[in-house]
Image (cartoon, rainbow, N blue to C red; front, side, top):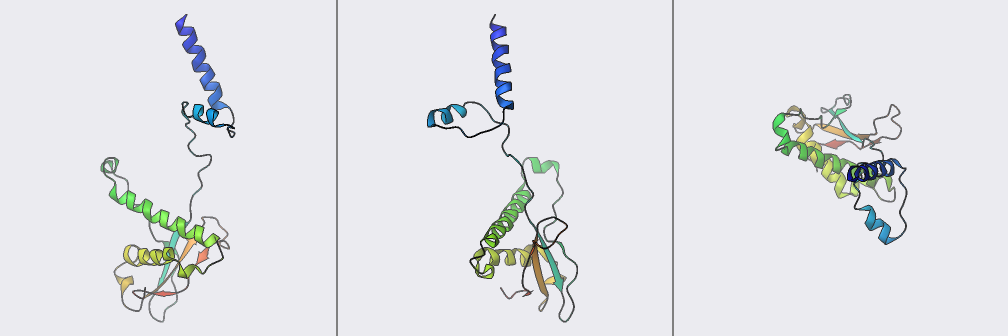
Length: 163
């Protein structure tokens, strides 16, 4: 008898979990909802903008766009300690913050602290030793990942070390 009750409760929970999500009215029902786990943490995960950089020597044209922060290879040790992965997540969070500030067109993006931090990120982490020579120029863009580049933000030209 007890096995049938447990099976019935399990089936009822599975049916409830498969129902479409909607807002719960009332504080009591919202608190009751916390007792049931939800495995749908995100409704839809969208890729954030990627940071790309183009560099140029003095008097030369800019080269092709390249990823500023290519993903580091995953290792088994990263399951325990993943300092580089956490740093990459912080960098991506900074890029996402700049993208959200750019959506608010009320202010000049170059006056933003986030913009200055992205510049510093590029100069410290993303440029090779040869690209950090005095007089080297760079610009960056936030690429949305679609074929149409109209929605991309492209920065002004910056000189290495001028920030």
